[in-house]
Image (cartoon, rainbow, N blue to C red; front, side, top):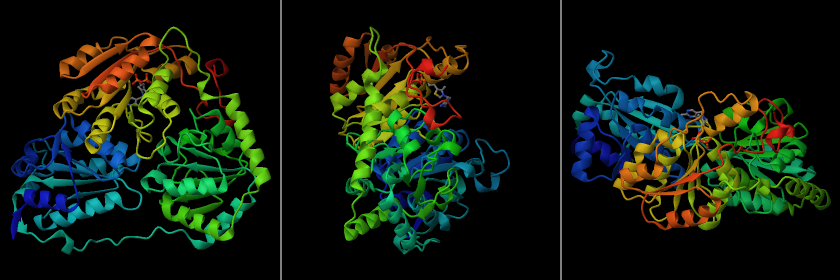
Length: 567
Ligand SMILES: Cc1ncc(C[n+]2csc(CCOP(=O)(O)OP(=O)(O)O)c2C)c(N)n1
């Protein structure tokens, strides 16, 4: 059977199990859009291509499936680059389809031409320019395969218009032989044994886990391992939700804005078992003093992550699930028990640190405290919402004060730190989970970066809730200027902001505002119960800071609890 490019496109997507495309049309992809129209292929029309990429990303992070977006050539394609780079840094499986000018005009500065494969080479796991219609189905299949296998990531497929207009004999894609074979990511038995020997001998062991646990669907195995060994757990920003945030062994997030007790545990542990994390500088602080009293076991699916930032004593290349399953089995066979006496001392020491600097120690006054807004949100949603964040103070407060008990419920741009990520990502998550409460916790700066997607949310009746922590500042920038630039607030005052309630209403959403502490709970209750898109504008204490904080370039041992200790 002979089929044209767009028919092959939709057929192959269906074979890959694609349920939804996030996209925005334009000349180079009109043939594909015509096919989408004829077949009524599920598609969400965003208002900006950056929104499409982040929405596909939010869909992928919340559901674990591959997110898909489709945009036109030139500016349509370049508008996705921030979204692609965001997904690349956080290992999110995505396939981005871009239209391209016709093959003969490539390289002639044709109208709406951009070398998108060249532009995205450093921020995609792989990218393709389809040169023959015969290659189309196979290329799409390979793109999905690469996006989801090993360490996941975004893959871009560039589709010249003339190629898509031509036709070829279509073969069921199951009959296509891919150029790849599934690699195995099993741990080396000898190294794993060495790791277990170290664990048995450890007096102050600590688990540091990252997004690899969530991507590798290894949360149950992690819990089993931690409970069997009674080893306390800390997780990076990307790993929030990998281990229950209310578990007695949980220490919260470490690093620049990590909890005091997680940072102290890192400084004082004698063995660190690290799984699925790349030792980002935001986690390690000064690397030369990071976990300097500990032996390090590093388990990661990506060989390139091991020994890149922190040297491992035992490097294990493996997916998180296989490694943890095997360790759990060995523990069972060995009738393994930790040194109970030593471990009790260690857990007691951690309890002391927790009591010395609990997160709840922020002060409450006559202005709304942002921390309180998030704590109240946690209480009202019983921790069961999907939370997206923007970037800045809002992101750090969310990480600290919303206690993530479940995987795939915290969507945040960890690696790239993209303002404007959260709201479209929340839209993607709400598409994946229409019945769940999905909230974007935003700053008044970040929300303005993709505010146009309010139209998308209203258009598709997506009841996403936006909680704006409105401080009239680019808050995190202001905090750094206060602490490290003697309060010279250069271009961080954004108090000239729109009336967010009116703005919400202009888009057809509901707008609510709270200006006093006693209004926080009723406003959240009301907003969460409205089955529409709701913008809640909380006027918070303008100069509140995020603490604890480790000054950039210093050691985790220098974690400061309040601003007076830093300046
Ligand atoms: C696209 C982009 N531009 C600039 C930055 C640098 N940056 C990091 S945090 C921040 C301030 C964010 O302000 P706001 O969204 O109001 O959030 P708050 O910190 O007040 O919670 C800025 C400008 C960024 N992360 N992303």
